[in-house]
Amino acid sequence: MVSETSMSKPDAGGHGLTPKNSSFDQLVPLINSVAAPIALEHPCPLRQLAVAARPVPALEKCGRRCGQFGRDRNDRSPARHAILLHVTRLNPERLLVAGLTIVSLAVLILIGAMLFQSNRRWKVVIGAGARDSESFVLIQALKAVAEKRHPQLTIEVRETAGTAENLALLEASRIHMATVQADVPAGRWAQPVAVLFPDAFHLLVAEGSKIRSFPDLAGKRIDLPESGGQFRSFLSVAGHFGLRRESFHLAANGVPADAIFRVRTLGNPAIEKIVREGRVRLLPIPQAEAMRIRYPAFLPGVIPQGTYLGEPAAPAQDTPTVMVPRFLVAHSSIHPNPVRWITGSLFEDRHEIARTIPDRFAEVRPLLAAIRRPGNEPGLAAGVHPGASEYYDRDKPAFVQTNADFLALILTVTLLLGSWVWEFKRWLNNRGKNLADDYNKRIIGIIGRARVDSTAAGLEGLHRELLDLLAGAVSDLDEDRLSSETFQSTRVIWQIAADLIRERRINNS
Image (cartoon, rainbow, N blue to C red):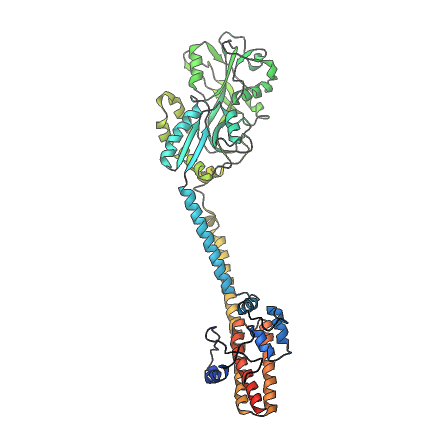
């Protein structure tokens, strides 16, 4: 006969709950004979033990732990009970496995993204000014070399009206990179990639002109584009000398000009052609250092004697002027990869770029020697583009190399702490196992006494002693002195002892 609170045979082997001690081996025949006919009525192990001893604190602890206190006894959801019981304890090993899984997935995703980016094809549009300008010729040669070196890179060189249009297109995200004068405000999206070469301000007047200095241009007709970077540069210089836009006139088509203003590299073929075809002279543009107060991109420079003609020398003597760097800039949103490749070709393939430049633009080849990394020169306020920075910093030691000693210290401390935590966990587990073994031995002793004691008073005393053991085990479980696994092994033997005492009391009644 099985009472209402009797329990079914626990699957100790299936749950890995078999106590590893010699006393338990002696109990195996008794377990097989007593536990076979017992039926399960409640899946929660804490409640199973508590039902036989109600009312005791174990029942309340079951209620706090699994939320089933006061529920209908017909509620049979073992999975729900098991989850609710086990989530109250954090398993470090499971957390470690979960953490390693997450880290592994993150590494795989990162590697996949890197492989995708490295094999992705890129198209870059570069605004380079007029077709016959030094910038356009240089970028056109750079295109051929960079595309040969990086097959996944395609470059389109777009002809534009100059710096102003390049920056407008860049701000509108219609091009990715551009060549610009440093003295023209670049906007918030342009980031420097490289300094290409310096441009010089050229002011030319007729040989017999009465114009001797820049202020003499007041009221004169100037051959000058009506917009763009050159126009802004001229206005900056004019403002320094007290002239305003209304102080001069722009020469219309076909109307002779009193002066010509150009921003070009030294030795520019177009300037040389003007000098050779007409009797002109170059006027000095002094006070460049003073202009830098308002226009930090301006640099003092000199047009050397005989730059454009040796005999008679043009200019006749070294002529002071203003110079501004010409930058290659990139939109801040463009991916670092193509910018890094283009920057690398600029610096590492100069000889190949020089050979690619057509002979009719041979004067551009020497400009390759002036290409350099952006430094502290004024002009563009934004920092260097990340792609260019990656190229420039390629030889710098990695973070790990730079901080090797510090990282080694951190790793050593981490390993020591990890080993201490691991040993502490082992100590806790061993302590819990020893405590469970003590409970098991005491329960086995009660079982042995129950088999020989047939008196009602003796069995009642054994029953109370068994309940005290239950209360102690539940308390130790609640205080984390026993783990769920060791408690399960103890409750298997406890249930057998409780059922044996119950059967003995029924048989004696």
